[in-house]
Every structure is written in structure tokens, then in C-alpha cells.
Image 1 (cartoon, rainbow, N blue to C red):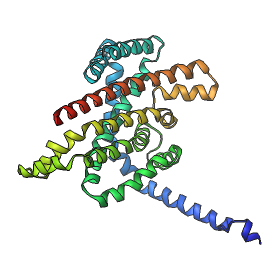
Image 2 (image 1 turned 90 degrees about the vertical axis):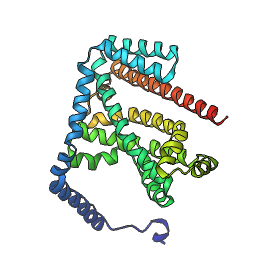
Image 3 (image 1 turned 30 degrees about the vertical axis):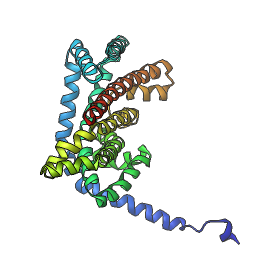
Image 4 (image 1 turned 45 degrees about the horizontal axis):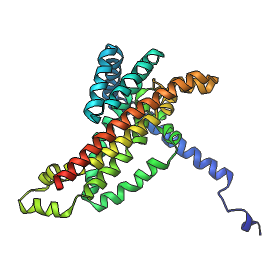
Length: 295
């Protein structure tokens, strides 16, 4: 009756050989193609480094002014603008300016990449049920697999550095923008599409003139979630060489520095709140404009 109480499993020797074969196969792949993959991502590394240097070397009043303009254009709320100003003043006063700029750079680059890849994929999913059936399980895996697991192949292929961290952030943050782009386009009223057909609009005219404009509030909700998830990944990305607010938090955990961890953690919270409120307000304005245009 042992079989009833003990699940039949692979023998230890067979399991060991299976693991070895997987490890050796991936090691051989990384040795054969690792350099080509690194060369492929070299322009991305140069772009990220240039972007980070731009934020760090730009005089702080210009950065603060740019963030205030961004907050006002996105939210049209004086309270959010004042909160943004006070937040960046406190971040700089407590000596976290450079780390914040590094974090801001990788978050913006990651968000740009996620939008550039995610929106076209979401459009393709909305256009074809077969594409949706193929992509959805991949998104499910990306959202449920532990972050540390997909760090392993990324580090084996690209080593420690900014690009592996950026790729890890993008893998973690891209699913919301893909899902909500797909959802937003599918939710466009069919009567509106039929009206555009009656005026002789082709596929691209319907897509860029009708579907995407009407889906923008939902798409912006995806952008909001992508930014939040990218910020949540900062600490884990710091484990593989990404500079920013996550690195002091990691050091604080290792050495039990409470003040250091709290200060940098709160700085990340402040960035998250600013981006969340601004993108939410902008999305609500788009939604209001959409409802007014329907009326």
C-alpha cells in the first residue's frame, strides 16, 4: 500500500540527470549565442546609460520644473503639483536625488519599451481570437512565475548589469498594458464601427481613427499599472546590478539599517503615488471626454 500514501515519482538519479541535461543545454546555448545576444542589446544599454546620465547631470531645478509640468499636464490638479514639488524637495534634502534619478530613468525606459511592445501585441490580440488564445497563457506565466525564477536565464545570458535588470522589469510590467489594450479595443461599441464602415473607412482608419481613441482610457489604465509594477520590481532588479533606490533598500535588509531602508522605500512610494495620481487623473479626463463625445 506504499503507492497509496507516497506519490510515484522519478528516481533521484533520473531526476538528477534530467536537471543536468537542462542546465548543460542552456549553458551551451548561452556560450554559443550569449555574445550575439549581448551585441543585440548593446544599443538598448547605450540608450539607458545616456538617459540615466541625462537625469543625473541635468540641474535639479530643471528636473523639478519638468516633473511639475508633467504633473500639471496629466492631472490639472494644483494639489498634485504641490505634492510633487514637496516630494522632490524632500527626496533631494535627504540625499536620495541621484538614486531617484537612476530609478526614474529605468522606470521611464521600461515603461516606454512596455508601451512600444505591449500596445501592438494588444492590438493583434484584439484583431484575432487565435492570437489572443496564444498570448494569454504567456501573459499568465509572466504574471504568476516568481520574479527570481526568470532572473536566472536572463543573468546566465547577459550577466549582471543594467540590461538584464531592465529586461526583468519589462517582463514583470508588460502584461497589464497588453491585456488592457486588447480589452479596450474589444469594448469599442460595434455600432460605432458599423458607422465607420458605412463611411468607407478601411481597417487602419478604423483602428487609428476610431478604436484606439475610444480605447485610450482603458489603455491608460494599463499604462498606470505598468508603471506601478515597474516600480515594484526596482528592489529585485537591484540584485542584478541596477542602480537606484532599490540598491540602498537591499543593503538595508542585509545590514539591518532601518532608517536607510525606510527612507529609500518611502521615496519609491512617493514616485509611485505621483505617477499613479497623474496617470489616473489623465485617464479620467480621457474617459470624461469619451462620454461627452458620445452624448
